[in-house]
Length: 266
Image (cartoon, rainbow, N blue to C red):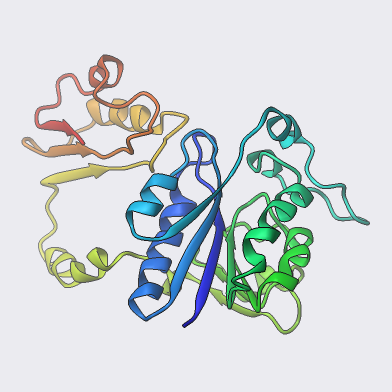
């Protein structure tokens, strides 16, 4: 049986998207006979309970005052390499994080270690390569070096050339939206969605800015829609995660929808 471990985090600061796409991949792998487990730091807004509810093992890395204080330090730069721009998301240095992960990986020696984290780069990966057979990176930024066997970037328009300077020569690279990690529900509704485009009419509008929406992009969109010329009777639905700040059920968010019939929030 193939054993796969994921190193990924969710938090109020970084949102939930990294964990959600890894869960999509993990569920698909389990359906094909693999065993999947997660390693996540217990940041405020983490999704450890959700991961476990999906039937996956989830190891929690502790958040301590020391690690929070180290969140802005990152690992010492090597040569001309700079620290990752999002290093403060980690809650530790890369070395500390790798040292915490190593004992968890030591016994299973997973066939794959999959890392989806903007705060980690080749230095972390090199520390953990002895503890896994192969290493995969999920990324969107193409802004730092990686020491991996496989890299996936599902960004629309992304090309292999964007990663040429950041990867080993023998790394397999999957770039572009054709590799998007979408849940089965989206694939199941694709034919229906394409049929609706034959006679496009705006009857329903779904707004979802992710699981946290820390900067309240939802409120800005709703305020713009309030003064827009949407068709009469258009149903507007807002979907947000349970950990979202300033949930649209609050009076402040509802005020953005005054004068817009058919507004609802989930």
